[in-house]
Image (cartoon, rainbow, N blue to C red; front, side, top):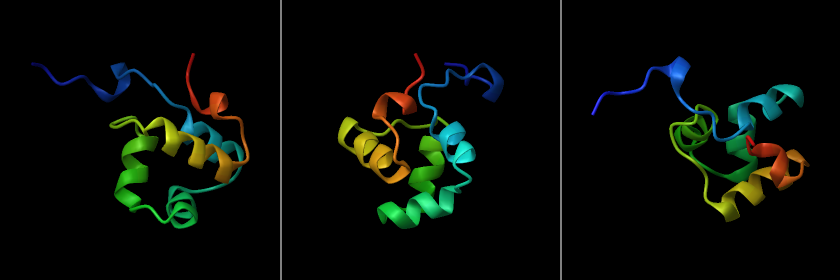
Length: 72
């Protein structure tokens, strides 16, 4: 199976955009949630998707509606 290029990869979440809009970094988010930085990086780059409970935790820390983190 061929690996998708970064440009053609489907963006399922908007964590990266919401972090940027709030002037926050991946490191900050990882520290706030007490998650491994690599895990947050995978979410931000859409290499992995957070579970629904984790998505709610991320939304809570970022003070946004969980729907704001999902691409429609």
